[in-house]
Image: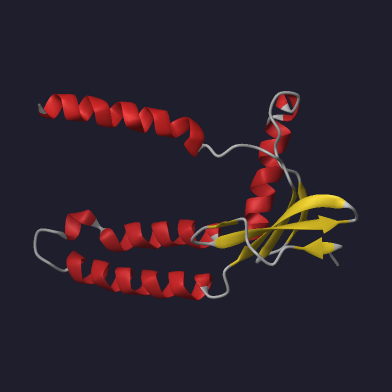
Length: 147
């Protein structure tokens, strides 16, 4: 299907990893969901919901309604594992900023499925490059306040 795909990931997160590939001569980013992430998240939330049910029965803590909060949170996180949903969101994002493409590149969805998302490859810089100076400044201010 791909002309070529790098076996080594260029990035990896808690949900998926990204590989560079070539499709019909075009450089693309292939995001692949980690194999067991959906099962692991379901297990984690099963445990957290059990704890929440227990806490809801402790006198004075029922007002926290942790079980309902865990239910809502688990639905949100489970949705993060659907790469086709991420692709839909990216399509919406690109449409909303279509007039801004001349100064900032956004990847375009090429193919999408629940466990794989293929996007145009956009060269760029890591956001951490811009965040790090602010962290250093924040740390400097905190050290001054401690003195």
